[in-house]
Amino acid sequence: MATSMLARTVLGLSTAAMVVLAGCGQGQYTKEGKTAAVEKMAMLKSGTEWQMAHQQFLAGDLTKALKTVDRSIALNGKVPKSRVLRGRIMLERSRLEEARNEMLTALELDPNFVDAHYYLGVIYERVNQPADAMASYKKAMELDSANAQYVVAAAEMLISKEDLAGAETLLNERKQFLQYNPAIRQTMGHIATLRNDHAQAAQLFEEALLLAPGDQAITEDLIQSYLLARQFADAESHIGKLLDKKENADRRDLKYMRARCLMALNRPVEAREILQQLTSAKEGAADLRAWVDLGNVAAILRDKATLRQTMQRVQAMAPDKSDGFMLRAMYCRLDNRPDDALNAINQAVARAGNDATPLVFKSIVLQDLGRSAEARATLAQARQVDPNNVQAMALLQQIESGRTITGHPDGEQ
Image 1 (cartoon, one colour):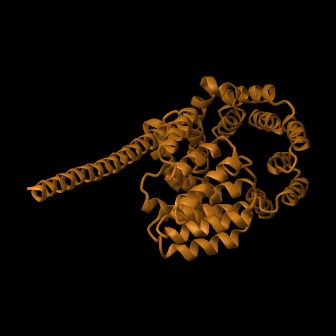
Image 2 (cartoon, rainbow, N blue to C red):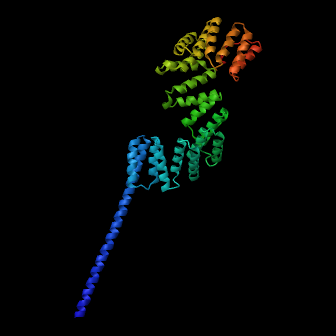
Image 3 (cartoon, rainbow, N blue to C red):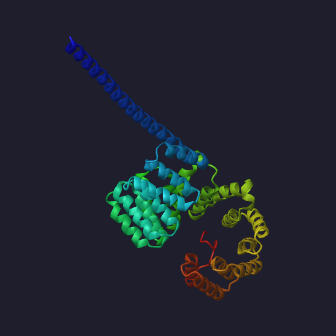
């Protein structure tokens, strides 16, 4: 019986020990589970805070974005995109050293985090470290070869350093991977513009617009290239399309460019209507450029009343510039007072600097007075000031052929 009692005692102790051990294991498992759950919840909260911070950043509220992203980092400091966002906020605030440190921290967390390389390149470019910037941009390109943003950023940096050949080489190398990306062709168009190859620039912007129909920035680049290439009909057509959009309806710059195109296309009546709208508006009271062009159109149309009005307004606005005296000379010529016209144009020439237009008009007035030799000499002087002046060459040919000079110094008849 003693032995039986001993066996029951040992059995009871063993069972109790097992219960205790089992309880310890379950507690440890529960603790680990709770820790994992807490970490998971922190990660979820961190992600939510990042999303909120990103929205605040895009909305331009940098103060709120910084506070929110700091909460995201406090909840989970091992997420590279949070560091990049914080760095972008610092970059917007021009705190470049802090921005750089955030990007480097992001790369410590993930050496292949492409946005960190890209924005590090932006920072290096801002502090005039082009070699480091290019290295960062190239790394971003290696990591994401399908993203044109990185290629364009590198090319634009080279353009800013006047390395047009380097930028063109880079774009051509990447063009095969991004053949349907409009930004590549648009940037190549900018290079052509800087080289004064405006026909080539127009072609590249046309290709870019085919890839991104309706893109406002590309359309405006294309218009500028058309104007520089003297393709006024194409420019006027695209300007009209932009003005048809509600958001562009009040843009004075587009209306002004359209008027210039209409003048070049020998449609002065339409140009006058636009310029009268521009000068009659509140903003037009001090718009010297619009008043001068209205005067030029009035001279072409022989509209003496409007020409007199613009002459007086321009001379009052800019008494030391040549424009008012040019308009006075045109008015006097229309009023059959060639001597007064010559006096006015001489004052315009004295104030014109490198502008050959007053000299061209002076030759017309001299021809009116029957002083052909002086007119010829004046045109030669105009060509010295501007060797590529088309009007001077055309008028010189008229004199040489014995024809009477008529019309306006810009070539309109």
